Image (spheres, rainbow, N blue to C red):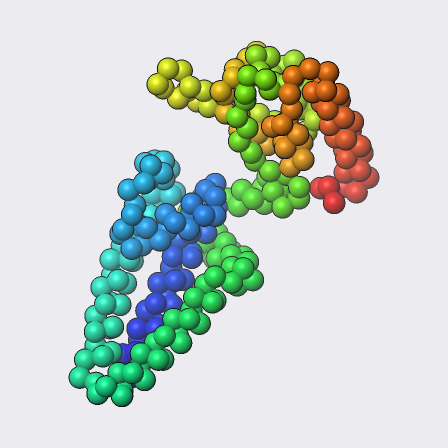
Length: 258
């Protein structure tokens, strides 16, 4: 029975390690889903060959996190398999069935806790504090820094030929008046994807460009669906007026939008 509880302990520790790694990766700017997948892949040593892997390991902090996960995973998986074998070796059918039942119940409990949103939020704060306090990893909570929980978002907008932004300079669009900033542009030039970071006002938006925008969620949605013509100009003006109104409210409240 000791081997069985040892197995469950190893599994719990593995879940905790992967959770810590996933949150550390998430704090470097990865989405929650991508961070969780890459952490699990690195820990298990299986599947870490996706198109995202080169992007992950090119970042110094992410590379350290992945290396630690791989190291711990190589030890943890071996221990888990060995303990699992010892759990059922030399047992009678009745004893093996009882241990299988306990193992199943334990795994179910671990799965429920690991998938709980409440537990995730609670452990995330603790893990962030621990990583910041006890490690040398330079990680930042981009969700908090960018106010993504206060009505702001980072979005990808693909520009179509009939888009309100198509073939116009950023300066003329005056997106900042709407509360939207264009952080970067991905542009196809032949078979090569060109990256334009922090584009200036002279940059012309071309059909097919993918814009990385930061701003109010509703403003980004409006921008992504806006077409050329008078209707698009009116929508632009409406968003400017809304941003002015919200700016006055922010000044009055001294903080983010409600």
